[in-house]
Length: 219
Image (cartoon, rainbow, N blue to C red; front, side):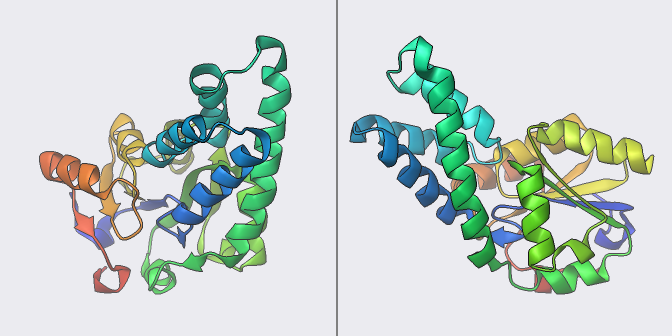
């Protein structure tokens, strides 16, 4: 792990890192599922999977719900897939405009001398629209999201910048694994994580830093 000011590239997850949006997205997904299905046990199972696999795209989650958890006729899966993704996307656009920005992250971004990117499991065009509307786009050299996987996004960023001197700030296991696959450093931002206990154990195991306040970071 380098000194924080020595990286050429800083990569940030969106949900739970740039924005305090994790719980809002969980509630949004629950609302969407309840609008189309009535079995509360199966809905709860879907939400439990969603909560513990944050960072993966909505396309992955909806496919998992329909293929593994919900009892759906094969002939209607594509119909439900479109409905769930469309409804969830509508809710996400609204909640992203109201979600709080993580404390002190803007000040931290302004201090970063290297390039700054977002690598998110959220849908890319939606994310870019919201960042532009909230004036957050000016702090980043690029905002990337699904349906491309997070690991592939990071690979693209590193190839574009022609460096592996980079660090990923994330709050979920998928963030950590994506950093590992690309052989870059990882920092766990903990306040909004859905899997704080698990991530703390993993970070202690791999000796990754754990932070709770961007204002305490020094570049």
